[in-house]
Structure formats: structure tokens, C-alpha cells
Image 1 (tube, rainbow, N blue to C red):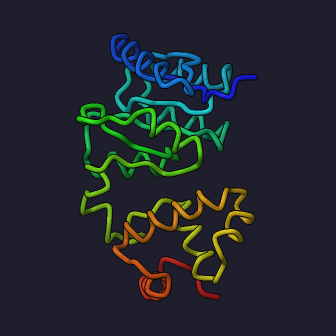
Image 2: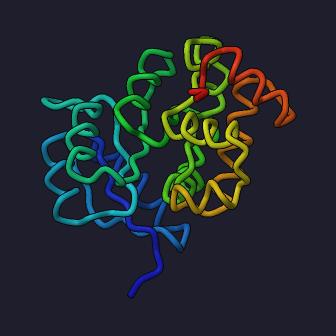
Image 3: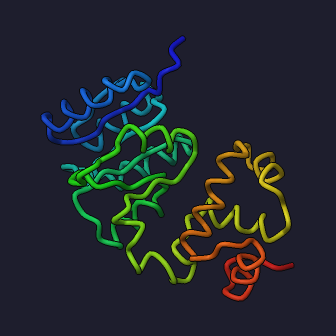
Length: 209
């Protein structure tokens, strides 16, 4: 059995897919198990191939990448999906995360970091391009830009759970929980757990029984 991370590439440009395939297969621990040029084929191949990670372009003909993400996650809610886009607009990022994608990176970035992003979403992390992470309107909104998973972990932190306890509760590794905790603090600009708890309660990010 292969220990490689299997990847489904979805992009409507064959040259882009070919370039990504070469880039990933040079990594050694990543394997492209299939390619799709539109949303319909992406959904079909997700069913057939059960890839570890789907790399999905946002802009696809006929069915958009976001629509394909929603359909795939309805059927396979634990599927790891990494969105690729030429655009860093906050609305698009928000829609991708709300649809259930675990990451959003930019195709035109100087350092795409695709292999690293794939490994991280495969491990359960949320990955955002630096240009997206710095977008001001992703912070300070009603949920402060946190993903549903981060809000879930924030709730458990406020309840006094350790990283290990949270990991056991959510069937994650303690390291993944630690990364989520760090991402939450970074998103909110907070560096101490006590301050995090106070902020979460004051801003209504958690339920207090």
C-alpha cells in the first residue's frame, strides 16, 4: 500500500494541470491520482478515486469550483479540499471556507507552496495564503474570521480543555489542535490563553451555559 498522499487536480487549463502534476510528483510523497477540467468531472472522480486531497480551481466552466466543493462535501464530509484562485477578494475566500474548503491559496503567488499546502490540509489544518491571511475584513467580523472548526476548538478552549483533551474529543492529533490554537490566536491578535478566553466571551464567539 502506498504511503503517498493522493491528489485530484481540478483546473480547466491542461497546461496548468500538467505543471502542477510535475511539481507535485517531484515532491516524492505526493501522487496525482486523477485530473478533471470541470466541476462535474471533479464530483465524479471524487467518488471514483477517493483522493486524500482535492486541489480545486475556483473558476471552472459549467459548474463552479465552489458548487463542486459543496456537492463533494455533502457526500464526503471529511474530504480535504484546497482551493486555488487568481483572486484574493475577501468574499471569495469567505465563500470557499463557508463551503467547507480547508484552504485557499493563490495561483499567481511568487511562492505557491502547493506541496506544503496539500500536506497541511491532508493533516486537517486550515491553510490560507499569506495575502489572504492579512486581509483586514477576514478579522474583526462577527466570528472574527474563524472557521467553523476553529470556533469549535475555541469553545473547547474556553471550557478549559487541554490540547490533548480537545484532540481526543474531535479525533484529531494534539499537534493539529496546537496549530489550530496558534491560528486562532494569530487571527485575533492574542498571545495568551487567558486573554483569548476573555475575548471570546466578551465578543460572543462561544456559548456560555
